[in-house]
Image (cartoon, helix red, strand yellow):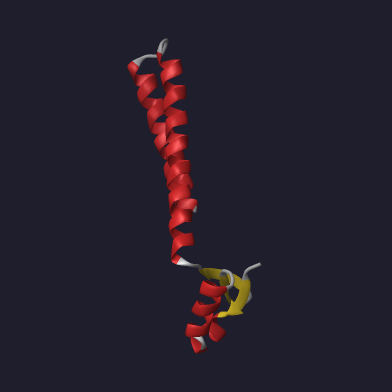
Length: 97
């Protein structure tokens, strides 16, 4: 379970917060009671980024496959619209995360 610390605690004891993240579990840094950032091991961060990229890749492939399936009976304009819609959805999901 992640350790939750106030931002002032992390500022005063940054080295200890990093050590806790490295040795035990993620550290969630709160400001005014609201989680703001997390301190995680770098390997865990890399895995999270890779998982996010793989998910986006998969969604793009699904959108492309759906567009291709429908492309047999669509006009060029309709195909372009589907592609743009898929790009827009991926861009929106990326900006939320």
